[in-house]
Amino acid sequence: MKIIMLGAPGAGKGTQAKMIAEKFGVPHISTGDIFRANIKEGTELGIEAKKYMDQGLLVPDELTVKILLDRVAKEDCAGGYVLDGFPRTIPQAEVLDAALDKLNEKIDYAVNVDVPDENIVKRMSGRRACLKCGATFHIEHIPPKQEGICDSCGGELVLRDDDKQETVQNRLKVYHDQTQPLIDYYAKKGVLKSVDGTVEMQKVFQSISDIIK
Ligand code: AP5
Ligand code: MG
Image 1 (cartoon, rainbow, N blue to C red):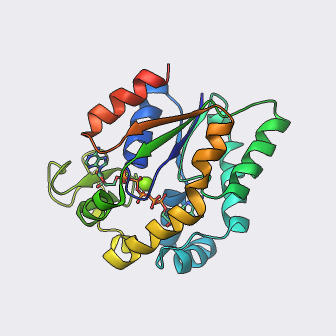
Image 2 (image 1 turned 180 degrees about the horizontal axis):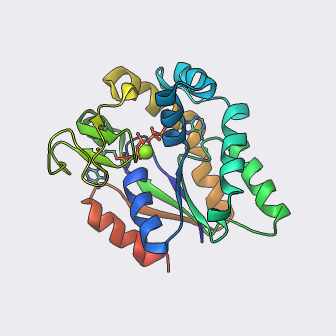
């Protein structure tokens, strides 16, 4: 089962991807989480990616594509995966399709988590993310049991650097310009499924579960 999560920044791609990955026993692959892990470790990739991420811009395709293709070639991806935050541009989608074509494989579902811009800004300021396992919480909607500590792994919860209000506005603009065209791209391939992402997260997951069988 190969699934792509589409949606604006903060739409709940990561939240849902985690649940889908657990349900189907496949890895959850977030390019954003991979970059953040590299930033934390101070790798060359992390230093380069941070320049773009802090401004709400996309990390260039040359850096992103290779990382993703290497990751999906790993053994744990043999039974499929949930991609969260990739592809984010038409060229990225084309590279992924070309790689899958060679293996005679294809994307089964592109799940678009639909949330209007107005809701996004509110969500981002309340989000807290685990630096260790990537789990996300929300100080009002999905609070952790203990403030500042991840329920899943005990890691430290932080406000992401790119969740500042002006950066969020930039990320939304970049999303509309560069990522939203992927909705049409996958609709034309007949794999697009849209769900209402404004309702409570368990309800969003129920809608997704009804689609992915
Ligand atoms: P990335 O980490 O992918 O960030 P993003 O797309 O901006 O999306 P987010 O992670 O912010 O949101 P999400 O949709 O996962 O929502 P979440 O579940 O956390 O990318 C970061 C940066 O890395 C990019 O800006 C770019 O620079 C770079 N990058 C990454 N991939 C790239 C690529 N392929 N190419 C180029 N550059 C790339 O939920 C948000 C909040 O809402 C949480 O607090 C959550 O608890 C809460 N919430 C979730 N669902 C609900 C609900 N139903 N109701 C109420 N609250 C909810
Ligand atoms: Mg995310």
